[in-house]
Image (cartoon, rainbow, N blue to C red; front, side, top):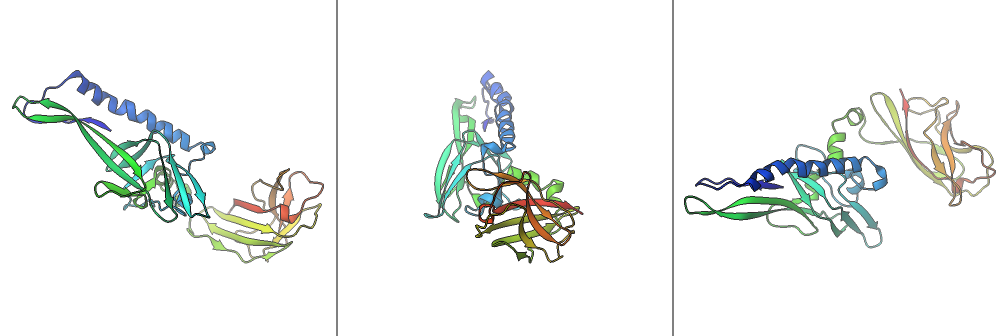
Length: 295
């Protein structure tokens, strides 16, 4: 952020000063709006959520204790579970808001250990020394910006654990997040079929039940009809009669079958293909899906 510094003692004022003041909004706002638009397009692949980035690299939550937030999208992340390191690739023209100031940072790539934070260091350059009418020399311009680093600094340094993303900050105040009655996922006890195992969970919102299924099978037996996944035992929050999940793809590397999870009146969860395949197998059909059933 560039700003004009005003000093007492008879400071000369130039047209360039007025141009700097005028450009404050015209330079920063387009960049901020561009980043916000990019964050809404999943194809860019930027990680903006503390739930995603925070499981390897600490990122602050949205709270009154947060010291600032990133204007999304703020970085790409690649992880190496063998070396326990993560590479963070920050794009050119990113912004972070700290202390009510919008600070731009340059493209940066850093590598951090799993569990270690990165740091945002606030830098300030004072420029344009001028002679005042009272004989003093004073800087009349200031440039303030941020530097992303894997190392901390003794001054004006903020840990990623103290910063959140703007996407989370906005999402925190919309009804989608406020509507969650149970903030924690609860595990459901089910009787798995056809070699499946994994987790089946749910949480309640004000107007629906949200389910998360993450299961896979070791059974390579060929099937021609629906594949039985698990039996709910008649204990399924929100009911299950003739309910279905959203559509998702399953299958091997060569072909993907568009399918859904369908619940029969007996409480059995079935993997149902939209177009019946000639042959498919449970081992080739892992199920990983989140969906809602209205109350």
